[in-house]
Image (tube, rainbow, N blue to C red):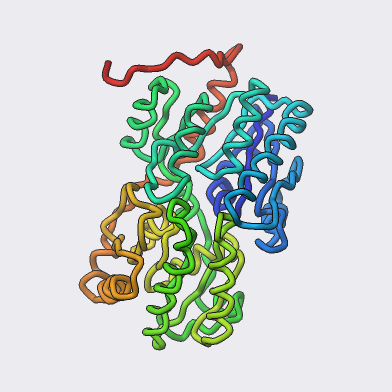
Length: 387
């Protein structure tokens, strides 16, 4: 059997990877090694590695890298710890392939260690753009470190090729988030309310807001603008999911705790888990914030997304997404539009541009085909796009 290492560092990342992990675990040709790191292992962020274990998956190794701070220098220190720790892990385990998803700083560090150990990397979701976040640079860097590429749309595939990757190694597979939605069994609205101990007797919004990492000292200001709008809607309820372990994320989480303490129409969670989160989307009136979930998954539920600021700027968007500036007046304008009967009709008819829900089997088929070859050559040639 070929050994495939799957990396996960956050709750959102694992939620997307879950159908692929499940498919690999049931395959006779490949053996998966799940390696857990980052926020998964932090009590502050909910010890979400337990979600992986409760789903019945074995974790090969837990590698702690987080520094308990959210400054740019602490992020660099966490990356350094990741490189040191994963260098040891890869030297011991020697996987035939490393699978990573997304654009987080710890992923870049792990991929650098894998590159030095001559381990081929398969990268999910290169070619995307998020102009307001440092993730943009991280994602493209991971693309250049990787051998196999899986993109969610054809436009993103072309962008990876434009970065010099050969078309034969770049595959459009759609979004794993869409597959999660199509395969999930959702909680009833009453069961969801009981599960989160929060009455859902009024229309409610799902709220997730992360720092915009290329805008210094703006997290507190921008998130306060969002909270100002929440105060204008006492007739609604709000379910907050907290920010990840990004620079300045703790500021947002402290503000959420204070708001929930002072307002009985809101509740907050470090992590809802995949089933409860998707069930929340199913019954929500809208999604508010700047999380990629509002663009990638919410459209499949036919609900409006209020996308605040520049964090997701540049991503392909469905017709159900309303973009707004991070100001009280503009967020409120977007809120009024999202809750209007006219826009609800638009959202309900929206087609999600991120695939048909068969993503994991497409990825695994390509991975197996590559691993069946006698040798993967890491001597990549730069492909001149359009040349």
